[in-house]
Amino acid sequence: MINTENPPRGSLVPASIFVVIYAVWALLVSSGSHIITMFDNAVVGIICNNNPANVAFATLFTNLGNTSVITIETIILFIILITFRQYAYAWFTAGVMICANGYNWIIKHAVERRRPTIHHLVYADGYSFPSGHSVGSAALFGILIVLTILLIRSKFWKSLLIIIWALFPILIGYTRIFVHVHYPSDVLGGWIEGITFVLLGYAFLYRYYIEPKMLERH
Image 1 (cartoon, rainbow, N blue to C red):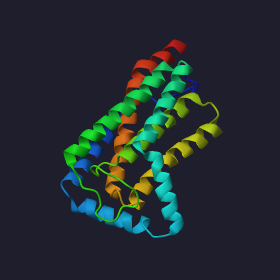
Image 2: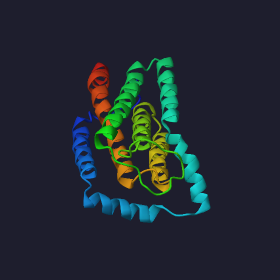
Image 3: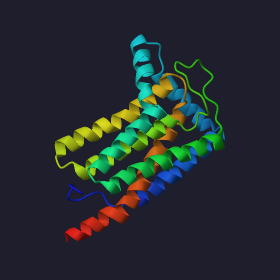
Image 4: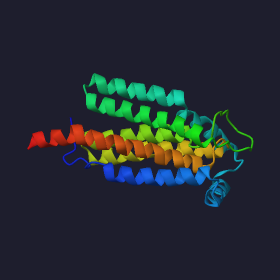
């Protein structure tokens, strides 16, 4: 099922570019580059404050990126897609999420970056880079953006949903910095990683499912 008349072409090239960007960013972080330090300090100076309303929002909204929440949302999406016999999209969803989160665990233990030493506003354990909340949310909502582009005909609803889906990982990443459990570079690295796996997953989806379907139309 492809409601979009002209779905985006394969994403292997942009995925490859994101792989390079992520590799460079990870190397800068792991080497303790001064560039990363300046980036982190600049962003923290802009974002963090003691406004009670902001603290209340950040400590609540950040829970939407918890591993358990993202996992439940992924399972629900997978079941919905299977129920409507969208098997290719269901396995695309499962594959991207499993690979993104599995790779994130590997990188965390390879880099072994310690979390910020400032008082954390919420509980967090494990290593800091990259932000698992950012990886998971970028991957899941990136998948939803892809599905929206492929399945929604209405330009209005397509545009509105894409904006909504994009806001979630942005806000979740923002809260991880605000509650002091991640450096901004952790969050940016997580976003890049999550997007990378969505692009890689779409490259496979396009090559082995969408392109053959498009050929059948002609």
